[in-house]
Image (cartoon, rainbow, N blue to C red; front, side, top):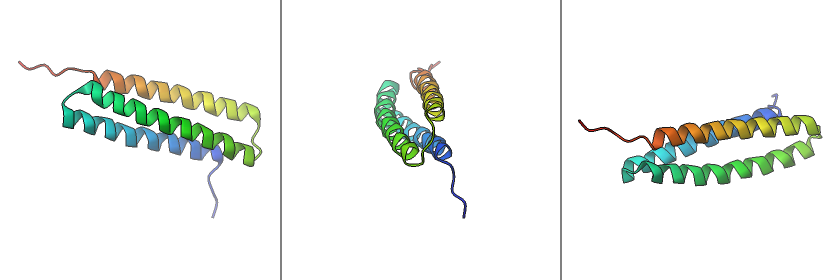
Length: 100
């Protein structure tokens, strides 16, 4: 059985964080009928999980002797993807419904 490389696991973890926190944020929005409450829940949980993922990635790359440049590149790209996710989530969750 072949295992995935560490950076592959990093991106799988990032995608899992996106899916879980998006479902949580949108679920809170449906329960409270307030988009910003859902966004703040999404932001808090995803930020905590993202920092945990970065700490895990740092320890895993240190244990597997990955070089500094791939670690910096993957961390930077993961952070850019995370910021895009937060921006899109904010735009979707703050949207007001128009009642005609």
